[in-house]
Image (cartoon, rainbow, N blue to C red; front, side):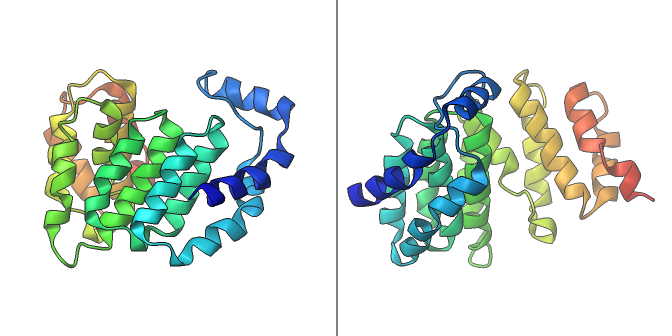
Length: 230
């Protein structure tokens, strides 16, 4: 693992751009340090490293991701998400707990939403075995950390006909009273995403639950309904 982290540092450090890093820090409200490397350049520089992990098992992948998470600059957390997203097929349902542990470290929307995609892809590939793989998301919905709750709301993004509609609607209603911006936004995003598959279902749900959701959630959820109805 240490050798992989070293390779990552050797690949990214020469690309550091202090001027760009300043802008990236400002965009993230000065929460994190940056090397100042755009995503395409990061992925190109570390492409061989990511590809060489095609034989790594779940434990190795998670150890590498955890090691990258401990690095100071934000690009290393982005690289960790790149690795997990590329190799999610080797992760197991029980690994969701490790992913949720990362969610709670250096938390902000950029890495949280990246990990939401990894969790979603991981769980979706196991749906044919049992819907029980989503039980962990039921627990995540009640987690005291709102970023973990956001993962629960977003984990079905892109599932389309495989979406558990009862879960989607129940999750939305369960968190409808929350004041946190990132939860209100996530509820709307999750509903809007499913509307691409079944706009009538989302339209009916919003009409049946008028007054339950914040204006932000309502606007996000209904954003594309007019377009889809044409």
